[in-house]
Image (tube, rainbow, N blue to C red; front, side, top):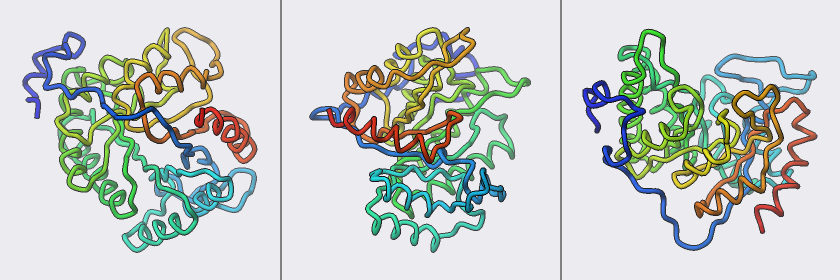
Length: 305
């Protein structure tokens, strides 16, 4: 594990790849190939549970369980479901997870992964320890239900912290969780989700610093708000262990978002020889029950080509 003192004495921006015990870009034999998935977050306003609290579903629809989302994937010919942790009931236990695993198998839906909304960039202490414990709990849950990947966040630093301290704390927490995840066979994809990994170089260096074959990047196509998001996505694509598609991007300084160039994104991933899930995380304002099937129909031939 990289020492905390090393990061506190060295600016992240000044670090070079060669100064870290770097992991290499992921090398995969054969040709790039991708499978279609949909994230439960695409239907976030319709679940019964949202981060352990009951919510009233939008448009007076019947409240969804995570099992209802699996059924939607099966009924709409979607091979993979990202079962986001936010929408599980607060009393989730092993029996629930095993029944969910059984249901997915019988409906012919693969569990592409799950996700937690953690923050590893907090000061040392109880709050950071709680984030680590929560992530480990979901590593256990992922292993029980057969989810191969968890999307995790680096987080944003508090005003009282330096960036170096936030980075050091994040890496130490990420490494601890990776050591635990590796024993369970679960990847932890660090997402380009703002905060201390808002820029691609910082994110790559952090993943390279992780000493685990279960480390990688959860590439979210809509989360770089830089002058050239596609060039920045190309920098992180060689380390991707999971991909999430957003239908919009927003460049630095732009007043409005623009539609995602899906073909360009797919070419970036093919150039990196990415093989794995290509999961839609629908966030725009249209009705997901109308738009998500349309987007899936658009994606199928593109993924197959």
